[in-house]
Image (cartoon, rainbow, N blue to C red; front, side, top):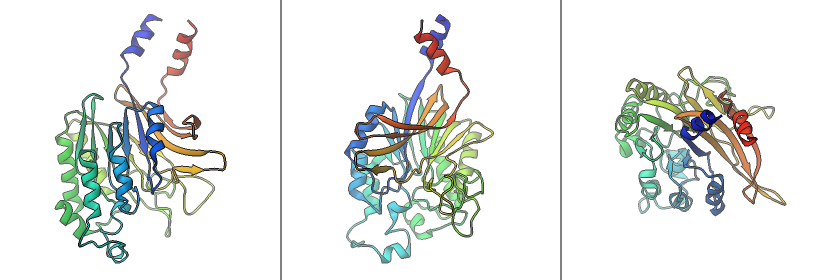
Length: 318
């Protein structure tokens, strides 16, 4: 029994909260909830709002270690001709995309990285502001902001960040997930609108992950959102939230939208909780908290077959 205790004491556990697409649903209780959950790191997959600068300011003020990537809605009035035509502010006076980037600072890992030596890992960001899909979009936006004009140049920029990490254990963060996770509409990045079916992931993200492994880096987790769990073509099931590839990497789609649901007597909010054990993903669970920050429900999407529960119960009885 003493050997079991020593093994548990030596385990390195990191608890991560992945915050799915926010879409204007973030308030001061979120930080209190995260602290109650006791997380070590918060990963935010973007789509905070339609260039919602004040909300991003709240995210930037989060006191828990964090990494974020901005999504397509975070450049809603800037990246496309349609969006610019609907822009409610004077773009010659304000640049709300840049304001968000400035507020987040080093916490924004899109095309960059954040080293977290106290956790024994680094976070690398995929292409920010992604709409997903296999065609290169928004040439002017990416050229002017990042000097990137193609998927290949995007891969080089992502891998360039991965090469510079202090840790060989890398968590990847994207807004949309990579290609390669399935082409059915229920798959993590599957296209669920007409014509139904097809892989809507980011091809540069998939290639960057492959090249990162060739550098000798380990990628236990890839977290993203964009493709909402609620499907457009059916109400009979939800999108598959987790995929595990042949290398053991766990891909987590955290886009459970809406993430905050007020009721007559309560207010529920969700986080996707990822537990790393000794550098590998042990468990992925969708957790709903009530207004008192108690766990209302917990849906386990993935768990390694380690007998941790049985050992803990046995130890508790001794």
